[in-house]
Every structure is written in structure tokens, then in C-alpha cells.
Length: 142
Image 1 (cartoon, one colour):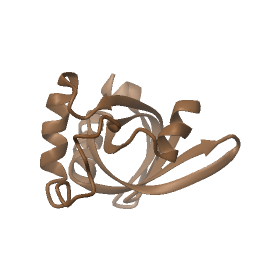
Image 2: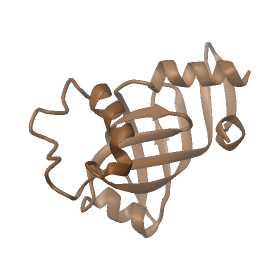
Image 3: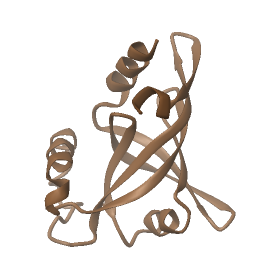
């Protein structure tokens, strides 16, 4: 089953995917849609370090996501500037995944606050062909 789940996750989310991302500001939830890409148990998003979502994640990294018959909990973390050498490999993947819109003027890579948000998934529920699958991402991806 693990291989099937990994294949389903890759098929559904291993591309530019709109994902609902929920954070907390104090005890008040906030949700927004983000472009994301799934890879090896985590979603990646290019965003802005000074945005409300990133400030909320800095204060409380516990997040939730939802999209395409899938919900999950995870831990959000700022991987830093998109042009940082340590981010070169993931950014090559993200630029390719987001190619349809990435260079349309919305993303400014020259701004050091343009960053990568990684959401390391912990647990979730995936529906596939009418079957509910309860997922432990630490078990699936280590």
C-alpha cells in the first residue's frame, strides 16, 4: 500500500497544485490558497518572508492543508531565500513546476525576502476511488 499511496500523491500533487493552507494567528485560524508542489512527503511553495502566512508560521509552525480529496497536518518552515545556494536543486524543480506563471511579474527573485516554504506533512487522509486512506507521513517517507 505504501507504494500505491506514494504513486497517488505524486500523481495528484507532483505538479503545480492549488492547495488550501491553514495557519493560526493566536487562536484564530487563517486559510488561503497557495501554489504548491509535492515531493517526498512535503509541499513546497514560493512565497514572501514578510507575508502574514510566514509570520504566522514563524510564531506557530503547525499548519493544515487541503486539496483534491486530501487533508493533512504538517509543520511549516522557511527554507530561506530562493537564490541561496542551498536551495538551488529544489528551486530548479519549482521553477519548472510553476513555469506557467512563475515569471509573470508576481515573483521577484531579486528580493531576498522571496523564500521557499516547506510543509513537512505529519499525518493526513487521502481518498482514492471511494476508499479512505489514513496516512502517517513519517512512516511513509521517513
